[in-house]
Structures are given as C-alpha cells and as structure tokens.
Image (cartoon, rainbow, N blue to C red; front, side, top):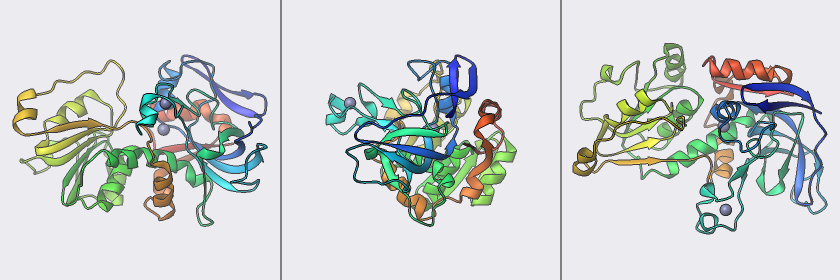
Length: 329
Ligand SMILES: [Zn+2]
Ligand SMILES: [Zn+2]
C-alpha cells in the first residue's frame, strides 16, 4: 500500500510499504481521510516519536475492510473513527484513571503506524462507529475534537464565564465552539494572523483582536485558553486571567519554551494554572458531539489533499496556511 513515512528528522516521503494485517482483536481500516496537526510536525522535528521511520497520522476515519479472528463488535463495511490512544491499562496512572499519563504511553501514528496511509490497523476497542449522516472523511475531525473535550474536562464549570482564547487555528476554533456550548457569557479570540480571526468571526465570537489590549476587559477573563503553544501568547495570557480564574495550557509548546509566572498573584488572586494532554475518556463524547453537529466540517477542513502530497501538506501546515488539512488516500 501507499503510505506517508517520516523517515528521519526533517524528511517525509510517500512510498510503498507492506499492507497491514490485524491481530486477533484488531481491525484494518481503509482510511478515508487523515488530518495533520502540530504533533506531526514535532515528530518531523525528532520529538514525540521514540523511533523513526514511522507512518504518521493519528487523526483518521475510514471503512473497516478486515477484522481479526476475535472481533465481533464491528464488521467489514462499518465506517469508524479511530481513537489513536494505546494505553497499557496496567501502570499506576492507567489504574488510577489517568490513562493519558500512561507510563507506556503509545499512540497510533506516533509510536505505531498511523493513518497517513491507504490502510491502518487499530484495536477494535479504539473504533467508534459513525452514524449514517456523518461523512467518513469529515470524521478525521473527531480526534482533535476529543482533545478539546479533554481540555474542557479539566476545567470547573464555565457557566457564565468570560473566555479568552489565544489562537484561532483548528484547536482554538474547536475550543471556541465548545465554549459557546458550555455556557460562556462571552468568548474573545486573539490571534496575530488576521486571516485566521476572520474564521473565528464567521463562527461567532464576542470580540477578536491581534492583541488582548484591544479588548475591553480590564478585570480579566475567568478562563484563558492558550491554543498556540507560543511563549509570547502564553505569557500574555497568564496576565489576563481574572481573580479566581483559570489558565488552561492547551497548545503544545516546544520542549524548551519558558515563561514567567507571578507567584504572589497566583496566591493572592487564587489563580489556577492547568493543562490538558491529548485524549482521556473523551473520544466517544467527541464523536457524539461531532454527530450532533457541534462543528461545521466545511469550515474546519480547509484543504483536502491527496495522500501523495503529504510532504507538501506538512509544509503548508507548518507555514500556518489554512485550518485543518487532511490527506485523502
Ligand atoms: Zn493531532
Ligand atoms: Zn499505563
């Protein structure tokens, strides 16, 4: 089959690799679409993935074309979205419900072959069947949405909160859509890229700005979400949290990124600084929300490129052009 392969640091190609075969409790999925995200760029830079070469792609959906001997829950012809998380279920963190902190953390498309290929293997336990009205290609968005759902899970009730989101790429916009539906009193979005703010406005926001100074909330925001991973944005956002408010580190920063915190203010104003990592018991709910229309795929997916253009798709994503880019085998 054809697959994208990150061969070594900085080098992605599309090549022929052997067709996958399913284990007893696994299925083979014919990939309909696979999304690209920051994680793929980190892998390309030599971070995250413990071993190269790797077939990337952890955001995918497709049709089941083969099942292992002990699979009864799904059948050939079923359309599924795939949760990429591979937990050990044995370590301290798994046994205490924090599976995304698993000591043997692994994921399809990060530590094992992923969905940027014609076919991918997944445990049947990771497959969520798609209802009839959901297009298989669009369901590549369920995985990033499940990260946004996890982001909301770490927060206390946001009913009536004023929310400020840094970054209006795919993840920032997903946080925006969830904020609107979890009872935010207002949602403002900051991005240094005006073209991206245009999409935020299209989805409906209270305010948009290139700098939060332009937004009139001197008392700050009860919830500030960083969806950029950028040091300047994080530093700015930390200073915008209202008294008793929460800062959520949702964007993926580079390992070396550092910002300053103000311990006195954290103490005196009871500021919470927290983070959310990937997916935790949130994939099914994301699939339900997706099927319920929480996102418009036509807005969120800006580019559908052929799998053969995977290296170009990565470059385009790295340049910050468009929103969610998916490759179609
Ligand atoms: Zn991702
Ligand atoms: Zn574990």
